[in-house]
Image 1: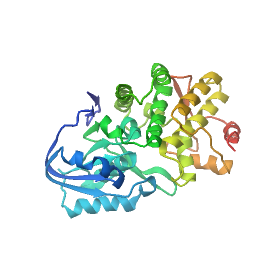
Image 2: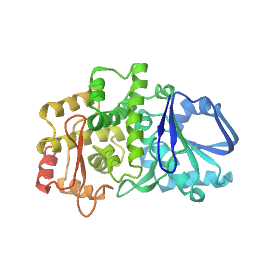
Image 3: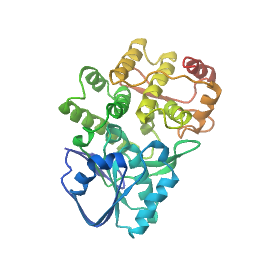
Image 4: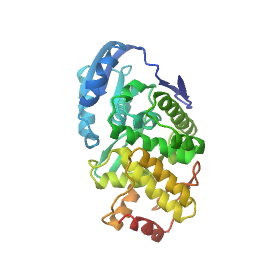
Length: 344
């Protein structure tokens, strides 16, 4: 099946289990990493019919999501003389997708790219919506652009090779969407296992529908799209503190959800029962729900590097019950410190 992301200037489809042939009358560069290429590169190459097709393999891991790796991809584009009609294809998880999209947005002032996610996290979230970018010493995804793909292909077959930990990391993004946008989907996740293929396909479809709808309403994150950052304000600080090496992105998001829920609980937005239900669902997929903050003041200060912060105010995305949300930028520092103290 396919789901349309409807945008004013450039709409496109997210295809679920529809990757049969990619026909492009131009030059193509596939961007991937050694882990993914070992499993899926040959399969993808057999489906590409292009004027020329080249592959660039970049190092695997969040710590390589930087300008050095972008230059490696750009070098490959210049080496093979790609032009403005050429296409980049991202074969990998969120890191590969973000870097490929960012490269596509700056090569000769912008060329097309296609997303082919190979992680659950990327399939349900990162591959859809056109957010691209890299990290730097100040934080995560602080350098980047909005650059929409021309198509996204989500293949459940590519997800079967995921290690358990990677699969669980993707579940954090699913749970994030269910908590803030769809109570019935949250209840479905509580009562069903995604290790059943039919259930996985259903969950992919539901999450991509949510993401497509949100992006269609707010492409550049001026309003409702910011809700998709539920848990991320905390998670990005955790990732930066641990130098992107201790936690997978989804694991950090899981902890961030727990922290955000503590804040929502203190504000009377989330009941104790619902807070516990979210924790139990995170634990169902072996996601971490605890974290030790060593320096609360430093942790708090790092919030101001978050892209949602504005005019010296921190915007928090909080659950309002299960299936609802609220954005708040007027929370007292003392209350935030109280919540952070629960993790110190």
